[in-house]
Amino acid sequence: MTLSARYLELGLAADVSDEVEAVWTSVSDRAGSYRVLPDGRCDIILRFDAGQKPINSATVVITGPVTRFYDVAIEPGMGFAGVRIRPGRFESVLGFEPTELANANLIGPDAVSACPGLEALCAPARDQTELVARLTAFVRQRATASRFRPAPLARSVISAFHASGGRLRISEVAEMHGLSERTVQRLVVKATGLTPKAFAAVLQFHRALRLLRDHRLSPAAAALEAGFSDQAHMSRVIRRMGGFSPARLADVTLVSLLD
Amino acid sequence: MTVRLGYTILYVADVEATVSFYEAAFGLRRKFIHESNLYAEMETGPTTLSFAGEAMAETNGLAIRANRKSDLAAGFELALVFPDPHDAYRKAVAAGASPVKPPENKPWGQIVGYVRDLNGCLVEIASAMPD
Image (tube, rainbow over all chains, first blue to last red; front, side):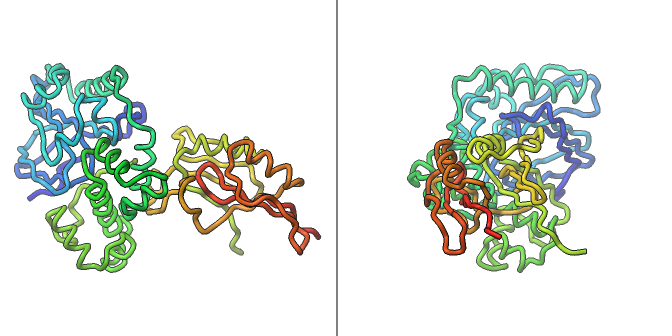
């Protein structure tokens, strides 16, 4: 099991926009598997042979929102270029709701039949940079052309869940916005493809990992700050969602999430 | 060296909108808004009032209860000192602040009223403490 390939988020401010949360690339340096952790997000990914120049073709993958880890088989030299779509923007970019892709991925022809516009992204390219430019241009152009606009309230609701590290209940987020729980449920499912409970659980999982790994808190202190009832509860959630024990955290790649 | 209070930083949903609101409602002036729209400072003398986007809280590794106008107010307040609190209160409410308590005279000689800002944070509108 390989928890991290060479994953790189490109800090190109110009590419990060209302629709795109992050642009990333990764080239695997070994055979094995790459563990994808649930992050409550959907990505559009181009998979290609990084050893080729120019690149003859790419395979497009749309990843849906997941609540559990999964492993992707990788080979040495396999390249990936991806854009992470912000919550609430999936539908305007891809033309269908993210809930249709909950806990699922669309690969190659399946992705193209769900969103025919993706086919043009797979054409031969000079290099990885061209693939990245194509991806970001695609997202921007689709979002601009779409008549679908995310509900402004959805952004505020999602941001409240985020800011709390998934610690607020649906009832609390509903009350603080003067909305019914049903409305919050609808807004979050529409924007993320996950129920508020599942979305909050993913955020809480991510925060716990960061408190352990980046803040170097003890498991007991991390469990308390992340809002778990105790350390055992946190460990169970990390095992279930991440598929590893908290002690093996050092190797994990964590993507950066902003609301 | 002694500790001093350097900044009060409010995490808000919309930094730009909050800066504009504080200018219109309280007559404060902006020092700057960072180009990311995730951080801004106001001209408030030696103790800086700053606004940071909620995404910054997350980036900083914090978890917070977001401030929302329709939620119960959080347990803190900003106290702003005006030459004429009655006039300041009227202007703030006219600019969209939620009225909470109109200014009244306190036994210790101050005039004190309360509003909530666009994000639901409590703001005290007061006169200076008499010498």
